[in-house]
Length: 261
Length: 261
Image 1 (cartoon, chains in turn blue, cyan):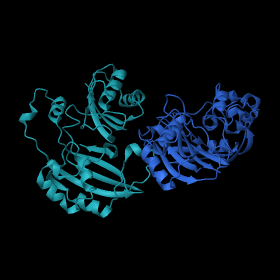
Image 2: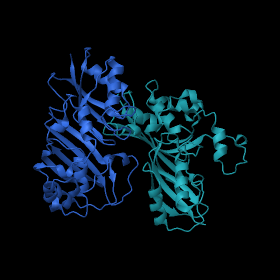
Image 3: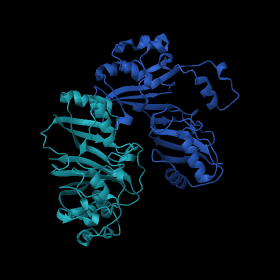
Image 4: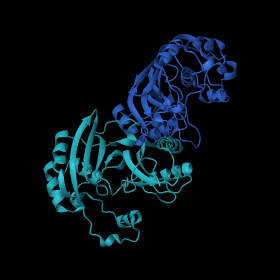
């Protein structure tokens, strides 16, 4: 049976995140509907991970298996005809059955975009940046960002998510697995962590082995928080406590840029 | 009483056009609500002209008169706090009472953006370009565009709008004026009419003394129509008949760029 790897870009604004939910527009649900309309087959595409409500993607990866044979170019074209313009399929390729969108991930890259200083934000950019009143200093941001490079326990930057266990269960490949039995490992490796300026925008780009829920938004919310000194990041990491870090930056500035396998 | 000139930019996607309508989101209505929330005064801001549903603005101009005195910078800041992020006020300045947003217009500039050849359109750009299956040729487009320079009767490119008379009456400064008595003059002067390419986008930029309803979209729809030769534009103009021209290009690609006084 043909196993397909697709790369997607989407505007997360009109969706309640990636993960399918009853009676709510989601990217996974909308994608499943498009596949069904084309092939008549009811499949649930597996993403490289969830993105939250309002988070965007330039290169989300999703896989699914069909029983009907269909040429890749036809499937690609048909998907983009069937999907709304807020979701586009960038590529479609057949992959071996062992390839798993989530388990096979080696590295992920995110970007976060901020328009600082209470500047007037173009309505065409507004859904894609955090228009913040904060003043930002590129050197300070870069200094803070460097402290997360390498392998750390990122518990201080992970969401205290009351229904995370439930959601993990829903998403788990073996539905009978008792997630509560598995010790949580919040250790991740960060390979790249930099800030740069592009016109008026401050952009954070981070590549890692994986990311905890809200991790990029919590890192950004801490980096830009004027109550922290850039060199306090190691202390915040060592605390292994969410309350040691800054607030969560808004979803609209976050893009899943690339997933590497 | 202070008379204010404001310059606005907006994403037209979530609005039923500029002109206020009962029970529908409009830019004029949303702007009036923001002014009322700040000042307590119920005024109807006068635009330089209407924009249709889904049409965007980078520099729409609107005027209104308040009884309360308020510093321009405070009014500017308060308006952007009160408005949704899809509408931004770019400037606020006091103008003489005689200044009229519509009657005082000297020149208007529009831009129209097309992504041709059935290319994959980024979801972040989709509300702001016409993603068309048509192939486009820059030299041909430019040749056609040159033919509309100067003063012409643009009846062939004006909307055959059944309720235009009603709408003109609604918008008229003297509500008792019988528009049907005024002979329609579809003559306009075009000062600038060019196509250029920016990355994958084809962009048409046109400046004129004024524009009829749907005129830019009908010009674009005709320029890109492969059934017309670029040198047929003079014949289409001479026909003074809407059916001589091509179809209306979609609203989403159109921007009101600048209004000059």
